[in-house]
Length: 382
Image (cartoon, rainbow, N blue to C red; front, top):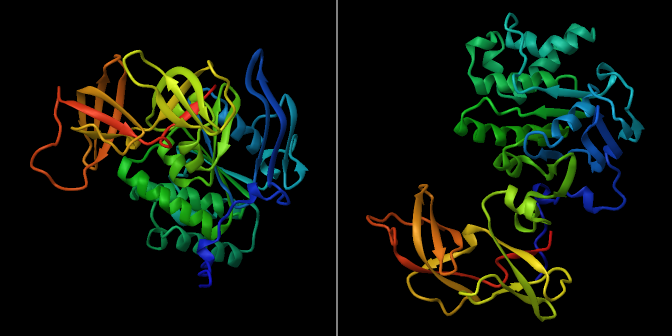
C-alpha cells in the first residue's frame, strides 16, 4: 500500500537538522562581562528563520543579557553576533530589523489601540494609506478589529498583550524578541495566549525569541529550547527531547518533575546496564545510550508519570520496588504519590485520573508497589 501523503501542515520544520540550512542568528564565541562578572561565557549558538526559540533558565543565568545583545542594548565583550550573515555588533538598536516586546507592554496610555500600533510606522514616515493598511492587517491578525478606538486601560490584560504584539510586528521585523511577555496574565489566560502567539508566529513567519523562566510556557510555544545556567547553554533541543532525553542532571531536574537516584553502574549487555542504588532494593535495569565504565557513579532519572502504582507486585515490568505512601496530591487530572521505599528514598509517582471515582484507590500509609519499564528512565553521567 502506498504511503499516505503528508498534508502541508504536517511537514516537519527542523532546519537545525539540515547541514545546508543557514541560520538567521549566529552567536560566535560570545562572552559578555560586567566588570569581573561573566554574564555570558563563550557562547556559540544558531537560531534559524521562522523558529520560535526559547531561552529558558533561572534568574541570573544570562538569558536576558543574550536578548539585550540581540536588541543592541548591550555589546559583547568578545565574539560576534550575526543576523542574516552580517555582523550586528555596533549597529544601533533603531537600525536593526529587530523589535522587542517587553513584559510591561509599554503601551502609550493616551493613545488608542489603533494609534499605538501605528506609532512606529508614523515615525518611519510611511504614506498614510500604507499605515492604515498595515494597522488594519495587524488588528485582524490579533483579533482586535473591534477595539481599535479604545485606550489601553479600556481593554483586558490579554488584549493589551495582543496590542503590544501587533505594534511589535507592524514594521515586519526579521526578529521579534519577547521578554517574559505573558508574565502579567493569569494562568488560564496565559495558556490561551500561548497558543495565540504560536498561531501568529506561524502566520507571519517572523522569527520569535522568547525569554522565560516558565518551563511549561517554553515547552508549549518553542520549536527549540536553550536551557541555560551561569552564562552557558547546557542543552539546545526540541521540547520533547529536552524533556525525554536531558543531557545532564541539571536539565533533567530543571525541566518538569523528576526522580533522581544515585548509584553505581554495571554493564549487563551491549545496550543494557544496571544501577545499584540501595542495599535494600534490587538494582535498576536500564537501557544505555552511551559508553559507561563499570563502577562509575551515575544518576538514574525517571519522570513520575513513567512509574505505575499498584497493590500487587507486577510481573510485566523490569523494575519494581515496594514502599509506603507518605503523601498524596490530588490535582484533578492526575494524582501524585510520594512513596518512601525500603532504603529510605522518596520517589514521586503520578497517575492519571481517567475515571470519576467516589473513593481513591490508595491512601496515606498504604503499602504499594512502584514499577517501571527498562526504557522508562535515563542514565546520566553528568
